Image (tube, rainbow, N blue to C red; front, side, top):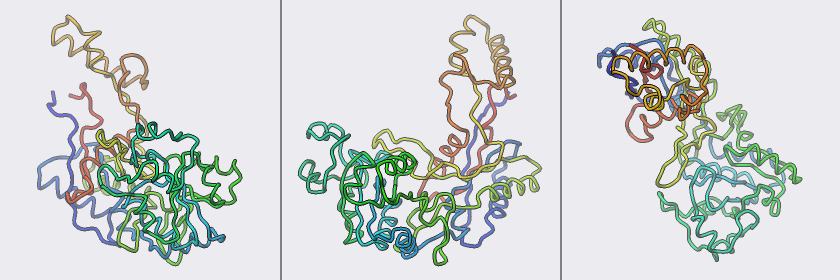
Length: 393
């Protein structure tokens, strides 16, 4: 019986530069790591490559001036409402600066007490104690300050109201939680929320907004030679320099298939490949949901489609294996797992409590937690044994 299950390795990589053949580099470095560290490859191993290095190799960048040019072209009125952006220096501040450069007046509506990914301006208790109704009340900045004073982020200690206003002398900040509330100030709106953007667009159009776009609609094509993303536009972008952003990678399916084919040629194994971004997990202290990207994985090979199909070993052990010898319990458990896998179903009490998330979301979280966001230098993750189970001998 094998004594280990899933193993995860961060693979050290050279610094990736624009124009590099990243697919070839990934294959070479993963194979080299196996030779130096003494491990072997197997069918259904998984290679995860962070979206950041894919976009960097593609040169998928845009300047603030290019963002501004697209905003100016798509909002000729010169007035833009920016609805429900997240509070982030890395994720949104540069986008707001570019939007402000492309408009005469910008009204930012922040949701309160927090944004959609859990960054909080204040606590729900503070809102309730103030007598403000967050479902119906729209507040100007003066009204908000009079009620709540200075509001600093739990982790960064940044006052995002002041910070966002500092990005342009034409920016004003208001507060509300219904999309249509921003129409009290402007008629042309960018729905800047990530995961609720489709609802926001629908609500704004129903309320009679003149122009409604999302961040997906800004830089969804090249502007003055910029990078772009045809599906996500500015969503998934990060600050690159003080004057530019790195966009979410494009042409991702071609990349993962090239890496998979390269691994097949180099090792003879059928290796699954995915690109991953934020891992979609929630911090228990700050309450921040780690998913500022539009999706965890923008592309993956076909073998990673679907959900886990697992049994809950604790339930079976507590309910079906009591009083049996160790050998008999082991034999029955292995049989049940194999029967369950063969059935292709994941229903019934014996499966309750297993994680009903997509495989790519689970694997993306594992990759993101392993690579981190700092200086580990491992933007490529090798996961082995993930599809094994207790019956794998």
